[in-house]
Length: 271
Image 1: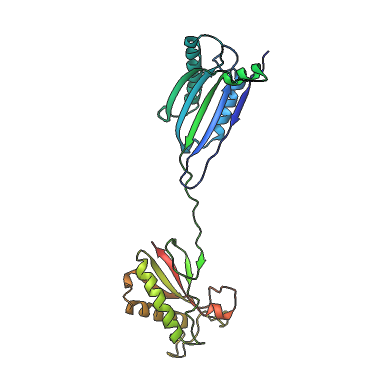
Image 2: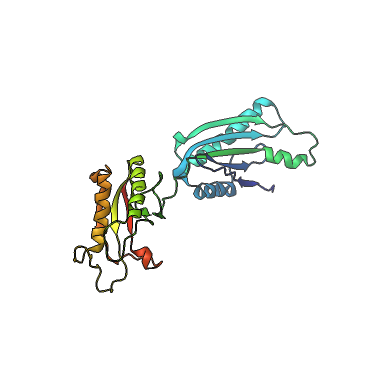
């Protein structure tokens, strides 16, 4: 009994916005176009292995070896292509995505072939070319940044590293005002960004989530720091409709030291 060759060859070409393509080949015996059980099982395995939900188009091309008359070879190659089409349809592939079913006839041997028999066996085949829709970009996880930029996503934290406060105070220093001027200019540039201004503190006991603001003598320091930044940005013509503010006390330590926890962050809420 002649050995049936069945080979799946994958060529994956994937980059940003490029198309992914898979080439699958089924090899037939001389003058045959029907699939035996082994071939059928392997075709089924191929279908199960691919992401059928992403298939955009399928093209099916049948071939013969170089022997025989042209008319016979075209008919045989077409029958081989139709056999594969029927197998795909029988396994749930939608007919509308099979855009090409074509018998190509014979493939001529190249010159100086060492093994003619093997070359002919590889020419008695059907190629199934599967084109996929691009893979959706992976869902980005929110990150931590030290500046505003164009491609932020909801949940991103912008740590205003130079917007620091004196211990126990919610008043902006001169340096902080200069830095907030830069932030305001970036917010004018990226008008699509909505955000929450988050105030944070350090150095209070765990049972006291909030600290006392020495300027108001009330336990509202982180809220007042967030409010201070909120009012400053409003004074720089940043719409209050884009902003909210909230104090988080000592509940969200960065774990980098007390100077980092005495901070204000912008957290993107809408883009």
